[in-house]
Length: 145
Image (cartoon, rainbow, N blue to C red):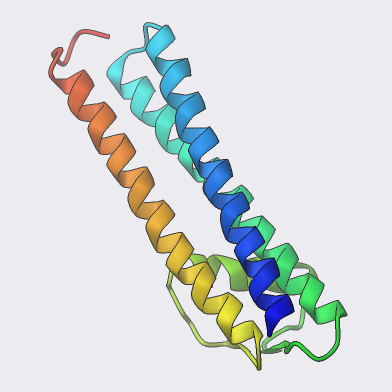
């Protein structure tokens, strides 16, 4: 249990760091440039999506790592294409969609729960960031950059 908790905490801290860096970079990049509001929104959303995909991919690698290590649990269910199954499962868990066609066993249940909680927090953080930035731009006016 301690191994799963340690690796999961490392993944959580890494993904939070990636997210913080993405928000900082996007904010600085877009404040330096004269960008039309619509383009800014598109760049911000694409930047956030890229950050989330990277974070989800790290958790997918974590699940795959535990599949190689015996005794910590496994993902059972529709695992026909294992190359994409970990990524798919991580997307479902991170976004709290929860289809249930793949389920974790043993200690991987803890990692699953912590990924869901992390995903919810980071998605809310992204939404808050974009809302605050859009509000700042909307105060300027629709035709201004």
